[in-house]
Length: 422
Image 1 (cartoon, rainbow, N blue to C red):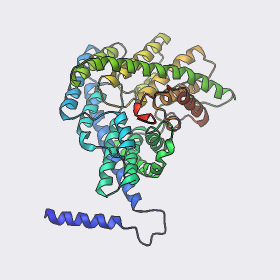
Image 2 (image 1 turned 120 degrees about the vertical axis):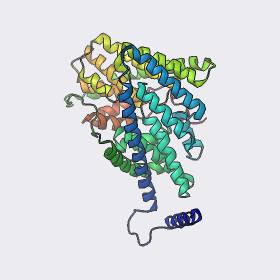
Image 3 (image 1 turned 60 degrees about the vertical axis):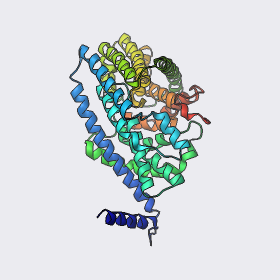
Image 4 (image 1 turned 60 degrees about the horizontal axis):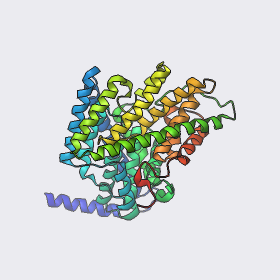
């Protein structure tokens, strides 16, 4: 029976290796593979999100002082998973594999990434699910490409398309997610992987639909900002000015993260001890400022609709930066894009307190764009993502702010594998 099934599989693969006959359209066999990857990616992302929501609601009952032992235990368990099942790596490893390992993402550590990230994110760590989804779905693209005997740039494109599917499922923005997957791979020559842009678009669109059907989430504008109309031609200059301030905090975040990374590296202890220490520190931060808990998918809306004092906003800003840094450096798993958006929004609210005459929406979105572009070096995709997620109708001010953050970023990138030569 097994031999018969293997022969059938070989027959199907041989058929797919043949070009579609009498086809007058651009549509081809590769389109089917990209679509299949998108369907698979959307399914994986949907199941991951449902599981994450369930665990988050269960662990949300532990509040007050109980949040400290809760996050400490979850950190310990996540560290034990990484120690015994395997280290899934971070975004640097993904970028390196795409660039230097012929685009192959190894799926063997996906169980470790899935389990550890679910614990870290659901318990309240300041990292989001985009990095785990990018790793898991990107490696699924590699697996699918190998299954259909793709090689070279075609195989690399499947991995990148999988990454794009992961970003898209998380952000609900096929165009922004696709560009983000391409742009984060190289800080200077984004067009190096231009061949993968069509696979990324196709896979992202299918992933977007499947994820929406599974989760039943409202897609589109995620964070509601006050309506904005560009009444002054100097709004572009304001956007640049706010972006310069936000970029300074981007530098501060990078410095804080590197400082804590050096401290944790000096601790010659197993990974689960580091994640335990990280959980204790995060629990203490959350105990005093509860809004810093989680990766800010919902907390950002709470921030925008609440009436925090200026003192509280300043505390939230610095403690959130510290929380993200601790989460990144102590071995917790997840992505830092949405937490950075939260930090930028907090900074925007602080600036608007001192300059209330300028549009609140312009102030917030400029800070969100600049701090993310400074850290991730993705000005194009950051612009599109923010326009989609905030419903900010004027595209150009966001682009000015993103480019400001990008060009004023540190010469040595935060994601070290974005360096031109390694």
